Length: 525
Image (cartoon, rainbow, N blue to C red):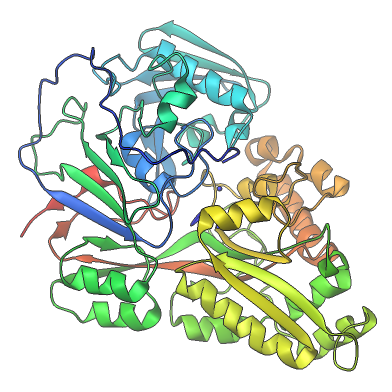
């Protein structure tokens, strides 16, 4: 599910360990948080699948956005980039040279300064990995550290670099000098970030998987009330998550089923939040092998999905999808919500030799363990396919196990969520549907030269000619959904959160799905 994806080119779950302290030679902190207080985040999937900020491309975003920082941050209200490690930036009129001015006084958790040389080194290292979302820097031809507080990017073609620099993946600035073998060092549960929190402990496979602690020298300071500890607990059972929240054992639950969310909304001492998102539920069809290699079978499954029934059952936790990219981003195609057509599905299956009166068909579907919405999808699809002489073998799996199996083409239908790397529609096409071998998140295994050529110039078009970019997105959408029938999109997620009433200052940012920026919260009561 990328994640609860969601979005990582290499899996580095190493042997169970606790994090070691950061460099013992780092300077002593000059400030410390005023009080000990813990924010506890409960989610249904493993948090960490890759410790390297260069290749990280999955669930760890929820922790990494509190440990690492990017040059800019995307504001969901202005829909523009705002300062983070960079306080200002400018570009030349042709959009091919960008200069960022860095914040003074920021340091990495290793004690070294966040300066222009460190920005250059970290982004160049990320680019060299060719992993995860490193493609976001493809337009960059060179990076210059003009002086300690100024860094300049020269581009091969125009792109919105201030937006790219706010990406939830592959845009992190980190200390490349933290260790000689940085990837190995990080893989033991260490970090090289500059954010408000640093790693205190990591216990892979355990319920209390990850604990962060305040970094005393954080540039933002600790004068106001803040949480000094952030814990991530893996609780696949939503009923248990709710009970833990009601008892005050956790502070925040990122998703409850509709029944529990309705209960949370009327429970004293609990707050709820609802917000539209950029997160889509995806059913990726195996176009390379098995019975779904036949496009008629893929189209039949597309038509069999009970889209309206699923939305009713989600009771507000989903909105209709239209095209591939959700509303609010360049690339969204309005006016084409999917419809169920069981008669059409039966005709297609019959032509393929299956269907009522034909050969029985068995399909394997995998989805994320502990995700009640995905379980609902599997149950609904199983019911509608049964009269069509199709048996659905639906299997709930931990994200890491599901993803590893998917990379080996071990299923017919892969259910996951997807959201953009930065606030733009290209991420769906460039990562999920563009040809790739070995597969990372292109888990439909689609290989389509026509589509690849169509996508080639999209990042530049999104700056130089938005109308042409939108037209290309519409063509790409038709290619994926109609011509190749590589996927179905049952809904767009509507975020429904529940958290303790004493948590002040929480806000949902759709560009950073499921992330709680713990430093921005204010504990009370």
